[in-house]
Length: 93
Image 1 (spheres, one colour):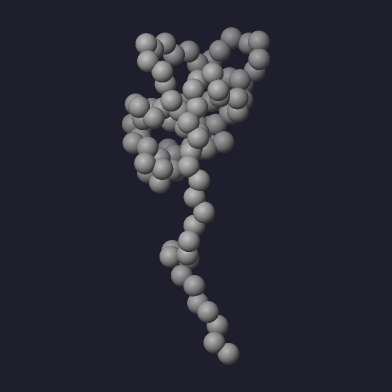
Image 2 (tube, one colour):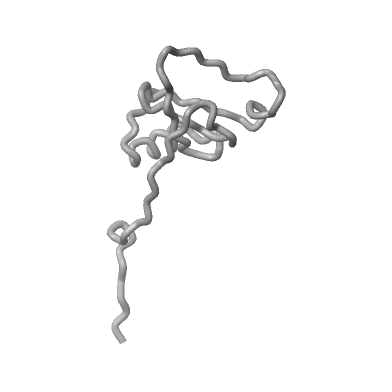
C-alpha cells in the first residue's frame, strides 16, 4: 500500500577517484587537467598515433601529474570545471 519515495539528491552515489598519470602514461584521448597548475589539455586521438610527431610538447624541470576528467577531448568547459570541483582539483581554465 505505501510506496517508498526516494529523493535522488540524498541517495548514496558511487564515486571513483580520478587516476593520476604522467605525460608518458597517456594512452587514450580525452580531456586532462594538470593537478599542479589546473591547466586543461584536450588530447584528440590523432595526438596519440604511434610514430607520428607529437602534437603536444611540454618541457619542464618538474614532473607533471595529470588526471583524465573525460574520455571526450571536446567536453564543455563547464562540465570539465564541474568534474574538477567534484574531485577537488582546482581548475585554471
